[in-house]
Amino acid sequence: MIESYHFGQITINGNKYSRDVIIFPDHVEDSWWRREGHRLSLEDLQEVFEVKPEVLVIGTGYSGLMKVPQAVRDYVTTKNIELVVENTRRACQTYNRLCQSKKVLAAFHLTC
Picture 1 (cartoon, rainbow, N blue to C red):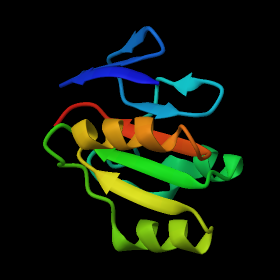
Picture 2: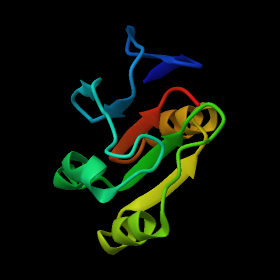
Picture 3: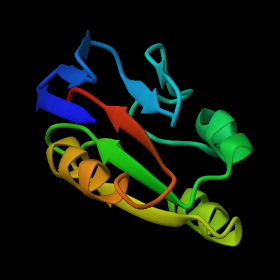
Picture 4: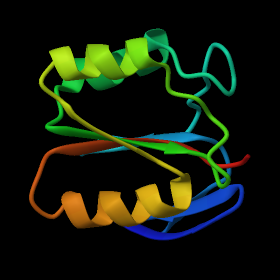
C-alpha cells in the first residue's frame, strides 16, 4: 500500500524510496531506470510482462512529463493487461484502490 507520495519520494509499506520504482505484488524494485529517461519503452517493462498483471498503473511523474508512446500502450493491450496512465500523484490513488481487488503492478516516475 502506498502511504504517501511527494515530488521525488514515495512511501510504500513503511519504506521510503527516492528513486523511481516498480511495485510488484511481493516486492518493490527501487532502481528502475528507463532507457530514454522521460520516454517509456517496452524494454523498461520486461519484468512487468513476466509477472502478467491484470492491471499496470504507470505514474508519469509529478507533473506528468514522462511520455508513454502509443506502441507501448498497444503492446500492453495485446497482453490483455488493463493500462492506466496518470501523473504519479493520481496514479498512487488509483493503485491503492485497484490493488484491493486485482493483481496490479505499478511503475512510477517520482520527479518531473
